[in-house]
Image (cartoon, rainbow, N blue to C red; front, side, top):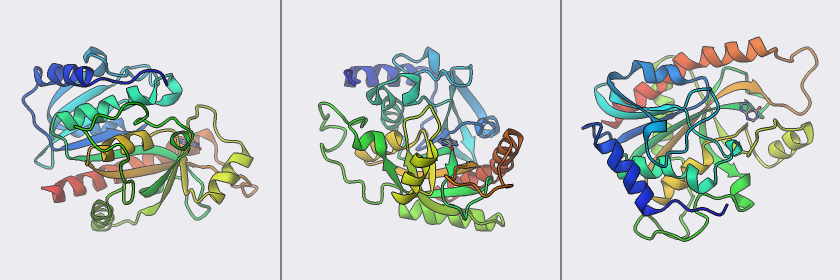
Length: 281
Ligand code: HPA
């Protein structure tokens, strides 16, 4: 919690990326675990490994460091981050703020955040997609907020508003995109926990009681950072598994079920993102 990213570090990373591409996307997309295939559908891609960008918090999860992919989706310029980093990897929240800060410095105005999450709402099913309406930022409420430390007033206010952090208009667009593609998405509250251990049954009961519909280990720090700078945020969770404190006997999922549910959700998530990008114009 001791370090703070500096304006110089943000400028360094931004200048490095600028020197490697002439793309100027206004739309940024962050891909969650198991969702990397969207990055492969970007046209005329310029792919930058994140471990070559100065000060970038490199992901240690998937065994590869991640990449930034610039290119076209639905005829619009986009910037896709594949391989985000997490607090549980040992990064400070401040370091996790760097990717959204750099995307903002590159000109990104709308940030689409995706993740894999556990379903707390018993009416959900593994394989569902959930539009994030709001979040519970438990680490943030306990002091691990990406805005902890001195505030850079040139970026945003000391006490940024978090009402409608997940843009209502973008949420509507996302639902419309899903309906146009012939399916419905859930909508709900994303409960952000630090991880990496999964929740105990008592913790899951607590998260349900607190109003959570899905639980996961990412996204909320990026949302807070992006909203601080006035970027619009759309968040979508793929429900990769149900996370219920008292599962109904006989309905437990195998690891294979979980993987299959995740993979079933990916083509639908890609359709929704394409639909939203098309509408953003
Ligand atoms: N808990 C926390 N994070 C997760 C889960 C879960 O059940 N599934 C995917 N990410």
